[in-house]
Image (tube, rainbow over all chains, first blue to last red; front, side, top):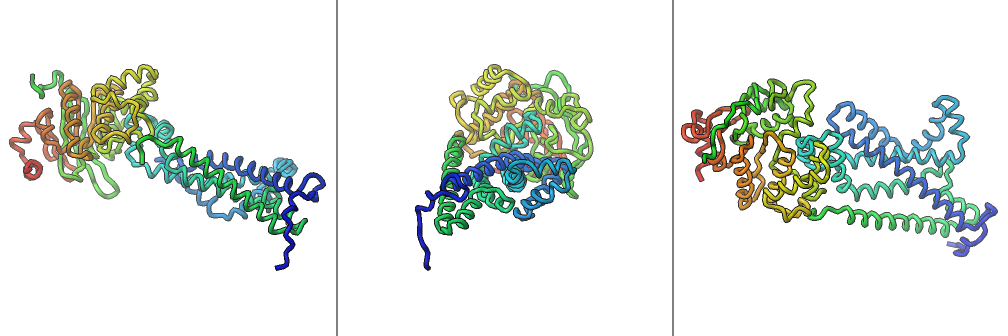
Length: 240
Length: 254
């Protein structure tokens, strides 16, 4: 292999005219983080609602929840990304579609919504599993005390379910973070897109992707550490 | 001082009127009828799978029924317009597996219902909860979590939690079946005291010693039917049905 290693390339000026390649990667990292965090907020909130719906006694709520999960879990993320970016603005009323298309950072908002809806289906499954893992007796105990269904979820079922599913939720969070790289296909200049353009301009493919890999690993490390701290913080005394 | 003094006023607190229940094609309750009057202690017993746990759970509508009707303190459990959460808050229930809320401290377990259902202030709920905790002999454990208590202690807390709502009647669904033998006594003691104070109680249990001590009546179930509904003395001394005789001979053999 005839490769010209150059680890100093990160400090070379980038073709954008301002800053270095390192600044370019940093800007990619910030977009990755912003996309991951914003989409996670949607995923967590919507996923919790859908997951709860799948455990309610109402048949209608069940059907809606199941339909949502099957739809968003079974279409490849890449396809969903294209649908949100290219198809949705066309089928909306024209004024809305035009507004969407000329929005600054449209690819960012699209990626946030797309990932949020996609990951919500996965969060929903975790929430449902968490609630179903709790013995039926917990729901009965809340109900027998006179709590309404909403109160039983709020004060009894969800606090326990979230504790149970904290580890799988962490991995869903990480999946969501890694999935942001799919948004490069709709033009979001996140970390992977930045590494790729660095490779194209500098021809230093190994350096560019080594940097991207290390950054992704570091984010994961930080997330796993924080999740571990959170888990210890919310642990119930006397439980396993 | 008789432990089983007849209740002063004969007013049905719980009235179960020809109820039937199916799980799909399987009928689990067959035309069951019985009453519990105010101040009365009724023990429901029978072989496993006889429907006794299901029967007691129909009283506060934890289990729906398809036929018949139930009233609690004159309020129809199945009636349209009945505020079920409110009705349930007046019916204390103790479960086989305790079902304390594992993420809440003992104090919070005792105050959650009072605060969220009855709208009591934190202060009032706490005072009431700690008083009941003292009554079941667990004052020292107020700050602990359910997972740090033994089964018997958890069940005593569960009884205190039910009592914290100032119920007009208490339902017990096999309260000692999940306990190690050495812990059965401490739970039964609390229940006996409760009975002697005049609480209206419906108790699903195999503890015939408890039935003999405090029950007014015994309801014997088998295969979804109420086979025998008799005063305690009649049930133990001269059970009419073969099925009750067989059951008693098995359960009292040891």
